[in-house]
Length: 170
Image (cartoon, rainbow, N blue to C red; front, side, top):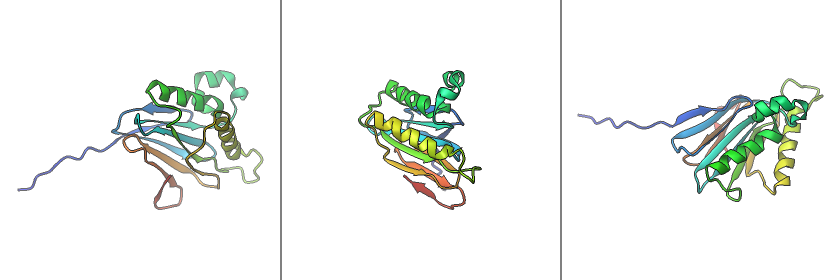
């Protein structure tokens, strides 16, 4: 006679384009897809076990203030502060937060006219610098799409790069 012990799989919460999610449920993994020029930013407080993720499209909300008001996750300058505020409401502490980024590639802009990926990375760095915060690890740039995962239980951040077989742990 064999005994089957059910293994509880983590629940996946998908963060769509211009969306954000912050949780303290240890049985959850946050995931966002299609990170080309967009940036996926994950934050994690290892003591409070609070994690969050945002999928931002553009660096500056001044091009569409009404859109930024209704969907702050669309822009770096509104999405990142909204992500941090939501984490603080779940008792995350700014001094403990680990910050990760993925994406920021040059997709469909071969002559680099718009440089959205690079501009997103620059806007994120400038915003974090202005608050004395640093990225713990990142997988940005290049010419590839990425998928970003954050485990709320462990804080492990993994990136799947298009065309690669294995995920990279940040």
